[in-house]
Structures are given as structure tokens and as C-alpha cells.
Amino acid sequence: AFVVYPESNVATDAVIVIHENRGLNDWARSFADKLAAEGYLVIAPDLISNTVEGIEKTTDFENTDKAREAIYALNPDQVTKDLQTTYEYLKKDPAGTGNISVVGFCWGGSQTFRYATNNPNIEKAFVFYGTAPDNKTVLENIKAPVYGFYGGNDNRVNATILTTKEAMKQYNKVYEPIIYEDAGHAFMRSGAEENAEEGNKKAHNQAWKRLLELLK
Image 1 (cartoon, rainbow, N blue to C red):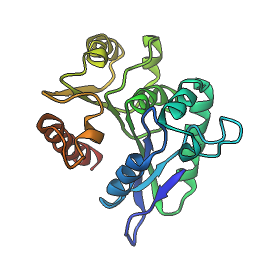
Image 2: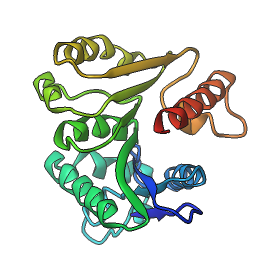
Image 3: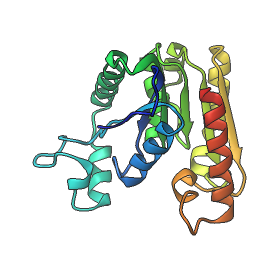
Image 4: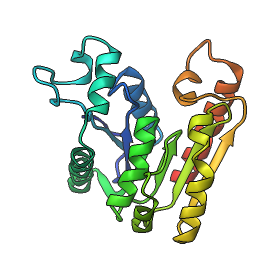
């Protein structure tokens, strides 16, 4: 896992960052760094570490395609177990207040939604272009508010929003999705690049501002 501590003389709230479907790469680390600079204790677990024989961490994979293959070979229950271990680590860290939110992107966004159904004690769930579990009955277990961030040009993911909205409403859960026009899938990563398309860049900046406001 990649752990980043804020410069603070008091205990701070914490955030678990769940990486995309390429594993714990440089961008995931840079996002964790950026969030810690805003005053949060941040941990980004490498969910494919030691899941393939001879490979200790994401960066040991031959290429990003191999990392992605390892991601989709994961047992969902093992992912939950690893996220729970991460959560317990933060709970015991004296640098944290014990208030823990979860942020996830792409595959990690879907895992964030899923983890919210498995851990009723997280503070808030931030789902970036991820989908809810197919079995909507598990949404009844969610206690935390779920905030969605979606790109307007991401039809595959956006096609699931209405059904999710209806299910969350049925169970009287907080689900607030926002769609950023002219942005594609993974706009937080691509929108942070120097040569980012205008739509992705604008969505990145607006979503970052919204995330910080909601965390506070």
C-alpha cells in the first residue's frame, strides 16, 4: 500500500483511494499525494500485490495489460477482505480521527460502491465512473452517502445510473450522481495531463472541487 501523511499537528480524517483497473500506478500515487496535501491521511492499497506468483506489486508486472488481467482475476471477497484490512489499519493509526471515506476510480469506483455495501461504518463513498453492484438488493446495506462523478461521453457506465438511482431511492439511501458534459471515462486521470482535452480538464477541475467540498 501507498500511505501519505498530511502536514498536521492534529489527527485528521482519512481516505482510502481505490485504483483503476491498471493497479497502483504513478497516477494513483500522485492523486493520493494531492489529497494528503489537502490535509487528509491517505492510503492507496495495491489490490493486485502478491496475487500472481512472483509478482509483489503492480509495478512488477510486465505491462499494464498484464496488471489489468490480474485485476479481473481477483476474487471479489478477497478484495473486500483487503479493503477491510486497509480500513482497520487506518482505524488504528493515531494520526487519524477514525473517520474514513473511500474514493475509487473506474474499476475502483465500482469497488467503492461495492465496499459501501460491506462496511456500514465508512463516512462517505465517492464513486468516479464506476457502477453499482448488479444485485441491487445489497444496496440496502449501505449507510454512507454515495456521491457519483461521471463523464458525459461514457455511455457504458452512464447507462447504469438510472437503475442505480431508482434502487437507492427505493432503499432510502443517499446517491447524488453528477455527469460532467464533454468528459470521457477516466477524466480525472486524463484531465490532469498537460495536454488534456478541454472537456476532461474542465470536468477534472470541477470534480476535484466538489470532492474537497464534500469531504469537508
